[in-house]
Picture 1 (cartoon, one colour):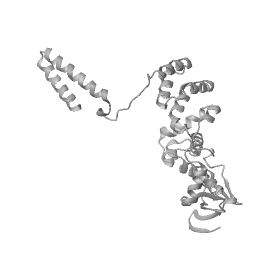
Picture 2: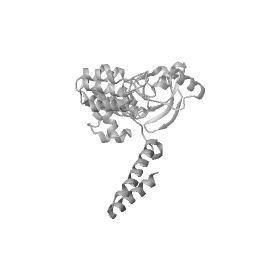
Picture 3: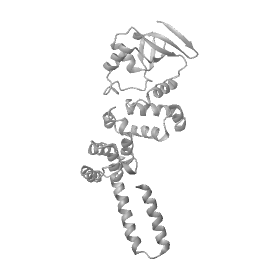
Picture 4: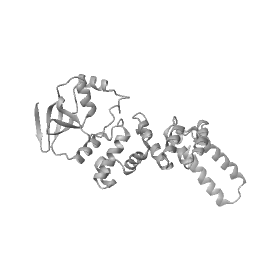
Length: 281
């Protein structure tokens, strides 16, 4: 084992890979999470070509080391049959600190399983006496985002299993709305299956309008299939053709009305309005 530069609390070393165990405190529980876009084989190939650009993080145990951060990198290096792996060895980590380090390292990775992330956030909350502000400061996440993730832990186990990396991070807002809308876990599952296939915006809208009624969900799903909830976000006035058409229609109507109005004050107001409309064109 090669020992590298040492600083108070940690040192950079080459660790015998056979003496490393994945810690129970590692927040990334789902080994398959994140492999849809970048498989372990792809990562191993990249490391073989470029080297390991970011060392894993471990802490010393009585025998060997405990992996805190870098689970996929560690597994990829094992695939390559590396004997040793560059690692930052931390000697200053308590269990709670190890969880925090693992979470902070992974929390901003889009591919982390959202249930893993939610569980880790809950552990941090327990560590900080349910002080959301402290957790927000420690992780750099907003309060609403933290609350949204924690809320998905109220989902039934069957749904938690369905929350894959592919759809989870993108649909946490919908899952939060599902938990808020239905108290019965069986109804949560039924509603989830009914709205599957729609975009998150449509799903959230269906759940909002359902008022917690499954029969209402059925009606709204039918409307969604008919395109009732189709939305178009305009980034500016010129981005949406219908806005310019609407402005022209209003302007023409004001011109016609102007001819029939006798009151001078109202005419002045109409002129101001038309001028403002003209600036929008």
